[in-house]
Image (tube, rainbow, N blue to C red; front, side):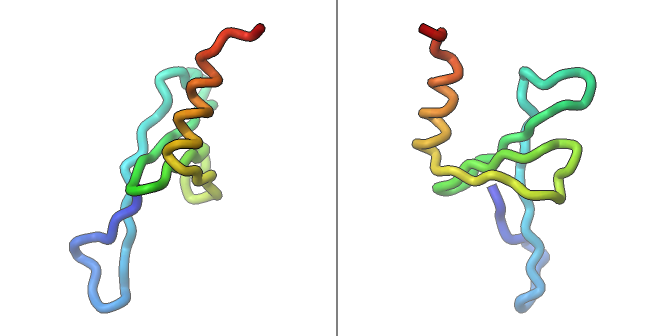
Length: 73
């Protein structure tokens, strides 16, 4: 998800992420974005991309999304 910019020099690093907006996002701007990386999945608010983000393991993300897809009993 986050990678060092190829233009970074001696400690002045810039990290870049590849985020995608949820397909279930609302047209009113209430959107979540997800980014995947080696060993981590990040979730952030698209209206505040510089704000905090939630980071979980890929296994935890798969369990979370599987639970969302499971009908309530």
